[in-house]
Length: 399
Picture 1 (tube, rainbow, N blue to C red):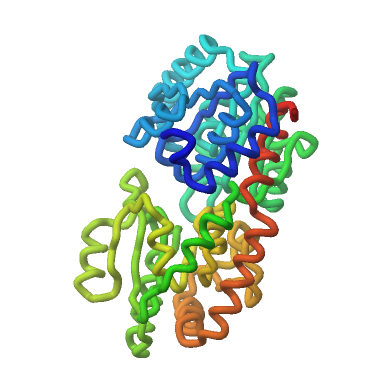
Picture 2 (cartoon, rainbow, N blue to C red; picture 1 turned 90 degrees about the vertical axis):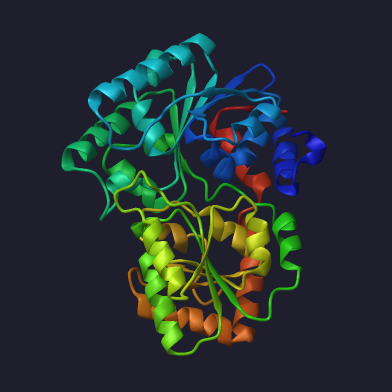
């Protein structure tokens, strides 16, 4: 991808990166997979490139890594694994990652999400001259109330995160103050070397362009997420059933990949059953979320997963779409209920159904919430501000 082919958001991130000078530095990113990086933090990569850094990415190759290579990123296919793996496989992965990082000797390493931070917990001790930035987009499933691993896995994770947290060459980034408090109280973060950066940044100009397109006459309600239980998928379907009984006129869609690696994943058979019932239209994984939001009237995320600040809530805010989400810290960080969206209690299909009904039957309310959300996205979540904070966290010099 040439710079002239970049979208507005990527261009804004690249331009913000130009205010920093990393021309003599290697910046490494360790993350689960290429899709996750491009879906959630493409802007960060562009900012690092804008600062003229040599960018290295260590992640599992699932297909879109070619986009990174086209941008001049050095990509290494590296299996990070899921949160609960055997000790032998864990040690083997740690050894491989340590070897490749020792070979490259990066100046800054971003360890993104709990999985990468557990795997790389000892790296700050090995690469003492390297600056490590631990990035947490939520607490991770292991610390969730309903879906984490065993007590032994939680203990092991806590020990690993505590080890890296107390190394002097580490900084931690959280998306909500409550997550910082949670980790700090359990000795998994040091407050003095931690900061809160809300979201990953959006370009309101890009997403607001999408909102100018005419939407369909029939209100379209969409849930966009990885499809597993804690994202609230079943609550969404139950709410649709309630709305069908009330003859609420709307089209309901479900967007996102089936996460087969999780025990609580929604199955393809369940989705097929819902479609046969006429409840939802399943669109699978979509690369062009802007096209989905262009026709979307209401975006729903009834999650009780330990979220950071879900990117889809920022994108839909920038697009001026009505947002309905569960009242958990990550969602509440982006929504002030009844001002720029609606928050509902977790695992409460009835409350969710009532909120959806209000959004699709009260156009004045929908217009007010959408406009307020867009204004807030422009004011609080601009990509330029976020990537600058990220580069500052990594210790990159300003020009």
